[in-house]
Structure formats: structure tokens, C-alpha cells
Image: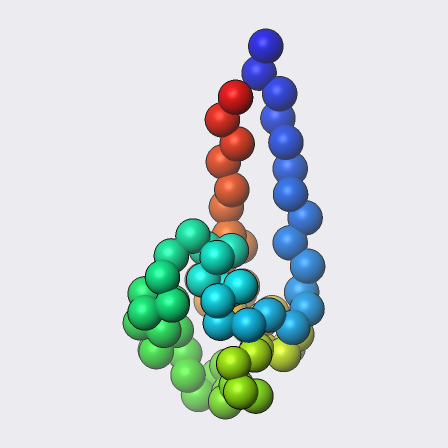
Length: 70
């Protein structure tokens, strides 16, 4: 029996590691994907993206997808 599971993704402050984890990619790949949108996203505060920046990232890259296999 297959069960569908959904995961909520919140627009909140995320570290670079957390953002990369949401997309299941490395930090290096995340930085490469975000490079064309640097001006729109703005500068991080240390290692963190604020909620407004996270919203822009989700808009530009799409929402992270998670596939659950039973």
C-alpha cells in the first residue's frame, strides 16, 4: 500500500547548509544556482538568508521537492 506524504516548507531564516539540504544539493551547487539572482536576493547576513531572501529563492528556483518512497 502506497502512502502519500507531504512536507511543509516554511519561509523562515535558513542557513546556507539548510537551504542546500532542502534542495538536496551541495553548498557549491546552491551557490552556482543562485549566482544569476544575486542582485535580486541581496547579501546574506553571515551564513543566513532572511525570510524575504528565502521567498525570492523559492520563487526563482521553485519549491524544493521531496519524494518519499515506501
